Image (tube, rainbow, N blue to C red; front, side, top):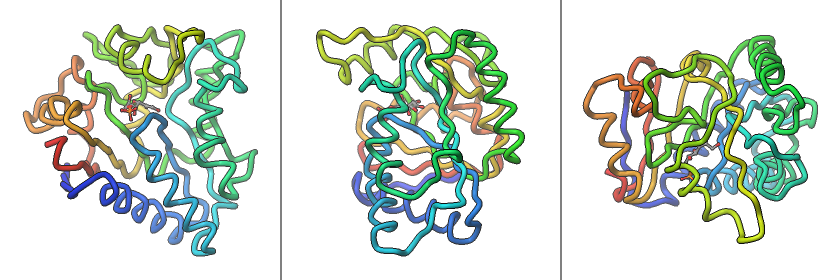
Length: 238
Ligand code: F6R
């Protein structure tokens, strides 16, 4: 695991965006694993800027988002589907049929998870996976526990995650207490992984990556078992 400490959030996003742009330029059909949350917003802005400048083409790129609340409809402003349209897809030329986000409105969540997993496999797996990290060390919505799921699954959200993400919801919006998430095993199958972390509230979780222990109570530590992970963080997160 390689760790790069950047001076600030902007520099962190620049570095991550450049890695993604390089991946797409060298393989226009790259399969990207994407994250939501506050962390990658600056990265998506830079990717959109590169597209506007005509220096990258996303028309053959295939994307798989990590997670989605459950249950939630795509047009709900709090859905990750909505987030991705707002922050990225409406600004670039990824083809709608190449976009995959776990189906938060599926009647049968377990079936939707199996279909999602099959779609990732059919696409040949993820080439480059972008990750954020929860204060509790979650990746995607793989929450701390005694055991971790390998594949895409339905999960209850922990108290900590509900507290952390409450900041995105207004008083009259109901926050779902479950999510669909790509599993840790599927994340670890990605050829290359970028984990982004900024701010002092991520410091404790990032520090656990230095311990060298795989601990299901801190799901991100399982990334220590992968051969190509780059942690990109700002000074406050280390
Ligand atoms: C979101 C996701 C989550 C977030 C994590 C950090 O798709 O996978 O694991 O990356 O909760 O969220 P922020 O960036 O809002 O601190």
